[in-house]
Structure formats: C-alpha cells, structure tokens
Amino acid sequence: MSDIYDAVVVGGGPSGATAAHDLAGKGHKVLLIDKSGRVKPCGGAVPPRLLEEFDVPESMLVNRVDTARILSPRGRSVDIPVGDGFVGMVDRGPFDEWLRTRAVDAGAERVEGMFESVENAGSGRPRVHFREGGSRSGPLRSVECRLLVGADGALSKVARQTIPDSGKGRFVFAYHEIVESPDVASEAFGPARCDVYYNGRFSPDFYSWVFPHGDTTSIGTGTEQRGFDMRGAIGTLRKETGLDGLRTIKKEGAPIPLKPLPRWDNGRDVILAGDAAGVVAPSSGEGIFYAMTGGRVAADAVHQVLETGSPRALRKARSRFLRTHGMVFRVLGIMQNFWYTTDNRRERFVAICQDRDVQELTFEGYMQKELVKARPLAHARIFFKNIGHLTGVVRA
Image (tube, rainbow, N blue to C red; front, top):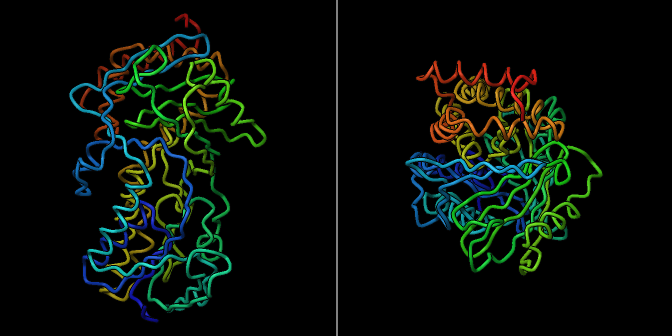
C-alpha cells in the first residue's frame, strides 16, 4: 500500500466500486477502502439498462421478474406486467463483491478497512485515517490523496466531516428478512413476481415487499417513523401470507436516503456518491442503478479535476446528475408524500394502477429511467383519472 493516491474511495458498494473501477480504468492511482460485514437491506431489483450501461453480465442476475403485483389495504390486487422486458434481481453480497473485484482488475488497490476520519480536507491533500481489517481495534493507517470520494452509505461519516448541510438528508429505515423461497407458487408467492404491499399495518408511510431471488426471497418493509415495529410488521406479513414457515437465513436493517443532499462536494477535494449523496429514488426506494450512475458521475468529476487542476467539475457533478434524474425524483417524491399517507389514499393509488396507461408508462419510465414524454395523450388521461380519484368522483 502506498501513502499517496490520486483518489481514495471510501465504501465498496455499487457506487464506490463503480467510481474506483472508472478512475482506475482511466489510469489513476486509486485506493478502495471497504469495511467487512456491510449491511444493506435491498430488494435487489435492477433494470436491463444497468446491465448495458455498466457492462454487467446477465450471469449476475439470480432471477428475472416479469410481473409486479401491488396489494391494497383491503386486499385488492393488481398485476402489472413488465411487457417485453424484465426486472433483474441480484443478491447484494455476490453482486457487490463482483463490482469490487472488477475495480481491482481495472487497477484499483483494495483494502479492508473502517473509515475513521479525514484531515486537511479543502487543502488539496486530504489525509484519510482508517482502521485496517475493518474492526475498531484494527491498526490505524493513514494515506494521502488528491481527491476523496465518500461512498460510505447513508449517514456517511465522510459527508458529516467534510460537506456543509450534510445532516439535512431524508431517510427511510428499512428492514428485511431473507428466507428460503417456497418450493411451489401460490397466491401469496410467485417465483417471477414482485409483490408490493401498500398497507399501513406493514408500513405507515412507505411500502412492504416480497421479492423473489431464485433460491431465496427478500421480505421487507420501510418507514420514516421512528419506533414503528418493523420486525413485528414483517412477522405479521409473513404469517398472513403463509410465508412464516420458511427458514429465515438472515435479518438486516439500515437507513436508506430518499432525498439528494443539497451539496455533494466541499468545493476543493471531496465529493459524495450513491447513498452518501442521497440518490435513492423516492416512492420506489430503487437505489442500485442510481448509486452506480452517481459513482460514475463522481468518477468523471474527479478525473476532470485530476486532469485540469480545477475543482469546478466537483461543483457541477450534482447538477449533472439531477439534470437527467431530478424530475423523476421530484415526481416520485410527490407520489410518496401524497399517496402513502393513509390507507384510504393507498386504496385509491392501487385502484389507479389498474389503468393500462398507468401500467405502461410506469414500466416504460422504469426501463428508460426518465419520464416518458412521447405519449402526451396518455399523460393527459392519467391526469384526469388522478383528479377523479382525488376528488372522490371515481370510487376506489
């Protein structure tokens, strides 16, 4: 291990591993610091676009989903077909490790370590301190770099130590149980179907899920309300769906951001990416694609700074990301803030999703990762149907 690097990346999830891979591929000297035993509850859904844009082989998928079933508080269910495409499912453990290994293959150095602190941030020569081995009792090591990428997840320590207003993030607390998948399909489980529950008993302000991963299945929930019994909610969901008899492999919980931070850089030599920057989609909670996109945007900005010596590219990274994805985030945020607040509204939301226009535009948007603008008449029809549900003209 050297003492001086062009870039140090803290965090080896999809965002950090992507940033390290891209920077190493451009010939920069990169150190990737990742702690062992990372916990991240995640449904594991990825769009085909991710495989294409980031050159991820389909062999990393553990399942292909062709239908999403949404269920209302009163038990109404709506099956939404994916159409010609599919939703891929990955297991975060093997998937993240594959991304880290690819970064090393591209030339990045990797060390298992736990970030402690950074000093001299803003000087152009940050010094990063971490515990080698990934435990708080490991030997303390220090390295110097020209730029630091904070990809250390929600509640990022890098952000809190270096970025103004980093405490203004918005979070959902997520919890899931990974279980052995049922041997046969049933009304409560489809091996190629994602089930999404909009029900205040299981989540007062978000949703709960049953996502099949081949041999295993993720059953989870999320909420912004502190004190809500997520373990109890998942226990109830499993019991009511008949999934309580399945062997539980592990249980995980962690915060997930639902709002981009107001700043992603310190103006000189630190930039955030992924969950650390708050780039998880509201309403859906989708994060893997946006994390990897954020990691690539951060890497491009770091590369420009290293090439030109000007930190201007760091300041432009956030606006570059939001120029492409900001409108989607805003629309999804409005959806969550309105439709997820009461069971009556959840009931109406599921009713709206019976509409074919809604279904088609939803998955077109999911696949393309942007609002679909080519069908204005469909948008107009959806607008008036929403008004009908909001005013009660249309019965749920």
